Image 1 (cartoon, rainbow, N blue to C red):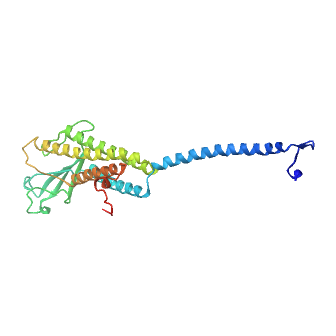
Image 2: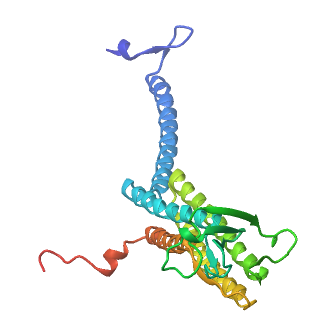
Image 3: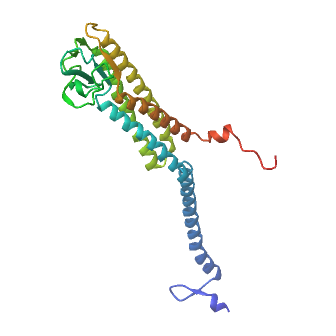
Amino acid sequence: MWSAFSVTDDDGRMAPPGTALATVGAPQGAGGGLSGLMTGRGGGGKRRRTTSAGHAMSEAQEGKIKLAFFVAIVGVVLTVLGVGTEFWAELAPSKSFYNNQTCLTAHYGLWKGCTKTLWVSDIDPERESCGPADLPGESNCTYFKFFTTGENAVMFQKTTQKNLNVAAAMLALFSLFLMVMGAICIVMCLSKNIIFFLKPASVCFILSGVLVLLSLLVFHLSVLAFLASDNMVPLHHELSWSVSCIGCAAAVLIVGGILFLLLALPYSPWQRCLPQKDSSS
C-alpha cells in the first residue's frame, strides 16, 4: 500500500508523502490559476462580443433598411435624370408669329438651352403656340456661359437672369452631394452592422430633398424673371417633364429620409402610438 504511493528522488531515496502531494499539487495549482486567468479573459471577450452584438441589427431590420435604401435610390435616380436633362421649361411664340411654314420653339434646363425649328403642319391645329418640343425638327443646343464667362443667354429677345440660374444649379449640385453622403452612410450601416449611421443618412436625404425643392423654386423664379425681361415677343411657357422628375425626386428623398429616421429610433413608433391591448382586457 505504501509503496504504491511512494515517490523516489533522483538518488533513489524515499521521499516523504507530503512531498509527493506538494509536487503533484503545485502544477495543478499553477494550471488552475492559468486556466482561471484564461477563463477570465475568455469571459471578458464574451462580454465584448455581447456588447458589440447588442448594437448589431437583426435580419428583419436589415431588410427594412434595404427597402428604405431602395426608396432613396429611386429619388437619387430621378434627381440625376432631372438635373441632367434640359426639359425644365419650354418657350414658344405663336405658331403664326413668323408667317411661314416653320416656327421656332425653345427648351432649357440648368446647364444648356436648345432651340428647335418645327413644321407648322406637324403641330396640332387646335394649339395656338409652337410646339411641343418633342416633335421632330432641327435642333440646336448650346451650354450656357453662366459658369465660364458669366454671360447671360438671349432667347426670343429675352435675357436670362444668371444669378438665379446659377443659384438653382448650385442647389441641385449640393443636393446631389448630400445624396452621395447619405448613400455612403447606409453602405457603412449595412456593412458594419451599426445602426448609428442611419441618423446622419436620414439628415442627408431629408436635406437633399429640401434643396431639390428649393432649386426648383429658384428656377421657376428665374423663368418668370426671364419672361419679364422683354415684352416685345409674347411667349407661351410651361414647365416640362424634367421638373416633374425633380418634384417626384424631392418627395421620394424626404420619404426615404423619414424612413431611415424611424428605423434609427430605439423603439417602434407604431407600438408607442398604438399599444397592443392585453387579451385578458
